[in-house]
Image 1 (spheres, helix red, strand yellow):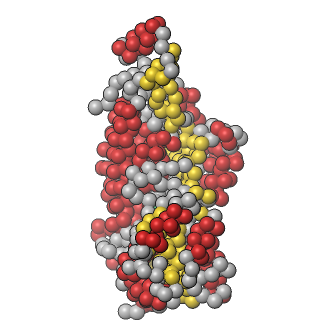
Image 2: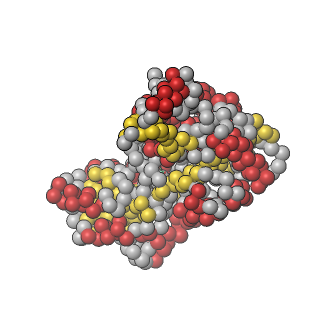
Image 3: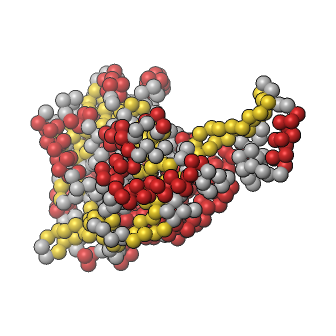
Length: 540
Ligand code: G3H
């Protein structure tokens, strides 16, 4: 079968869905607020899968169910529940102490694991992520929670001792910040939401959390676990249109931390809505346009395999994806030939198929958008150099290699977030370096080459432009213990297992001049375990 024929026949019939991949539509009418799972009777949004099924009338998107379209009223109620549970830092949760909070989180992770099959299936159907990668996203998230618990134990152990300096005795620890609004992206709707939600909760904050536009239903199986594992008001969920429910929350000024992974445009709007921005801490993962630079002496087989997964894993819908490639003119023909062959070897299909790499896209407007930027590049002199590149069927878009891309084209600067690989030929290394320096984004870069005398000075330039320089390796966030951040429009704050505990807390200390009376007072408090904060107890 030609690629064109494969794309034409990409969608199966209902009977072709294997038994283990089948699902029952989920009509979600529940939301979690103030410790109760409440029943929603208002309007709901229909959820369609990126997957279509062929029936008599032709291919039609699969209906997965629906979720509540909540209003300002419920949004403010959820916020109030979180505000009350925090109670200006006097609530049960912020004063519980680290060991107590860890016990609640351990209960949650135990309950979460029981829901693996439902969450993974919904993840696959809602965003079209392959079954294999959906499973990996779930497992990576569980591992992240366990690692975060361990990192918090370490942090607490390290701060369980007293410090004496210049005649002052002190105990320095980290305390919560207040109410956190958590919003994750659709490409990692579980993992990236939880990389902020979990540390925020563990540090003693209370949370309002809204799933992304795509990837909502997959959170439903976890509602009972959230309700039963944490005191009331610690976790509250919201569903609906961001504009209607998030704006009113921000305007109250009661959100202390905005944890948002999405576009810088939306982040700017949300920040500006807060009446006292200096009171708002922001933890943001934003836009990126990571470049891959292929030097003349690069191992081209390696460069192709890394740039292929770098650019096309989950159809290029990763903030860390390689979104533009600079290839030295002396290597371009061989590199492009190998890249095109490698793309032809990628399996296209439905997310449940084993080893599938290219699947339909969840965003309704993505296929027309990609067609637009490809047309724009063609108009300015580029070509799609792989067979059937950019060919579309419903929400399915076949990867396109667009060459040669120049600064006149939208693909030069726009984050395509999809299966399009713009390739720019260069003669002088100053050209890609200038691109990275001039770019509005500053997340990561990948450099492919073997000559240390060429690579070393590039590293020294690039580390001051982005926040991770990958050598002969694709860009990526993991391992999750590494710092993940960006400059310019790409991020605010640093996330990693241990950094996240820091961003969702503030250092605070109890200090006293070293007088005999103060020593006796502190000794007494420690001995009789009168305080949860001023305590030398060591978590074992
Ligand atoms: O979408 C951005 C994610 O943080 C990327 O994570 O590099 O592990 O795919 P990843």
